Amino acid sequence: MKYLDQLLGKNEQILFRTRQHFFVVFSGILREILILIVVGVGFYAVEKWSPSQAPLFYILLSLVAVVTLALMIADILRWRYEEFLITNHRVIQCSGIFNKKVLDSSLNKINDVALQHNWLGRMFNYGTLDILTASEEAVNRIEKISRPIEFKQMLLEAKARSEQLVEMPSVQRSATELLQELADLRAKNLVSDSEYEEKRKEILKRM
Image (cartoon, rainbow, N blue to C red):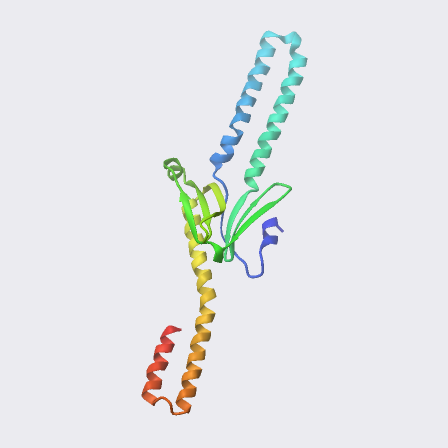
């Protein structure tokens, strides 16, 4: 079972998931790629101009290459294991390869979602989102995620559905109580049949 699956509550479903755009990890490993290119040039230069010193330089260059590759793999894994999810209850940000860090925001506490989408982000479909509370403080900043517009749309739709589910039972209970009170008034002959039917239709329209 995946780690994220263990975080989900009963009847909680994942509606949308994404991660940071690949440009983020590419910009992170670009330095390592350049170092590996330099190491490759170093191997060629040692072989061509200093073959007598080759064994020592080969060892040093190999160590640099191994460390650089390890850093590159770590950057890729960190990117791979960081995900942003929308469920029918909350927004979840999960990161970390071995030591996990989880940050979530309940849908009913989210006030708005601010999207920062520059021209490069619009071209390559990435952007930064600030999830805001009623106090107008950012609960969670999600930087340079892939498909930010879809993420925001799905988040607002999930929030709207969550609010409807919260409000619906109270509306139904209120209408039921009003119908019972109206029936009691009719039984006591405090309202006429025509008044009863008129009020009953008004209450039913609210349900």
